[in-house]
Length: 300
Image (tube, rainbow, N blue to C red; front, side, top):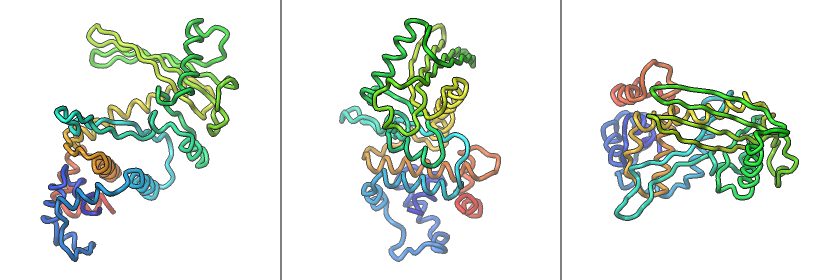
C-alpha cells in the first residue's frame, strides 16, 4: 500500500509503474518498510487492489484526510467523475464512474453524519432519488409556471461570461417544506433548492435544471455560493486529475481495482496539494520522483 501511494505521487499510472518504482527505490524504501520478499510484482499490486473493498478503502482515506488536516473548515466538495479510458466499446463495457457525495451519495446516513459533526449539507437530487426527486421537481415546476407568485421563497441571479461562454443562473430556495414526504427522515432538513442554468456557447443555447436538499436556512445567496463551489470541482479537481494525473487515459477495467486506483490518485493529490511550494501538480510529481528529500516532505 505504501509503495503504491508513493509511486502514484511520483508519477506512476499503472501496476507495472508501481513495480518499477519499487525496484528503483528499493534501498530507500528499506529504510522504513519491511520487505522480506522484495518488491511486489505488478500482478501482486493488481491482485491486492482487486481484493480491497473500495468503500472501506475510501472510508480510510477520508479518515486519513481528517487526521492530517484536523477538523475541516469551510465547504467540502466531492463529486462524481467518469474515467473515459476504462471503457471498452468492443466488449460493450461501460467506463468506470467514481462517484461519492453527488446524487448517488445523497443518503440519509450521510446527511445525519454531517449534522452530527456540526456541519451542514447541500446534496444534489437526480432521478435515482425516486419520490423525493419527483415531489421536489413537481413543486418547483408548479411554482415556475406562476412565476413563483404567492410562493414563499428567496431568489438569487448570477451571470458569468468567459472565453465566449455566457452563463446565467437563477436560484430559488424554499423553506416551507411541511408538505414534503419523508422530510423528517432527513437530519435537520430546512430547504429545497432549484437552479435554472442557461448557457450560450457559439450561438447555441442550452438549459439545465438541478435540484437540491439542504440543512441550511432558505438563503438564496448562501446556497448560490455553495452550489457554485460544487460546480467548481469540475474545473479544479477533475481538471487536475485529467491533466496532472492523466486519469482519463487509465486503462484499468476491473471495477474494484479501478475504483481503488482512483482513490490512490486522490490520496496522492491531497498529499501534493498540502505541500506548500508554488508549483503545478505535474511539476510536483516529477520533483517527487527525482528528489527523495522532497518526496519525504510530501508524505510526512
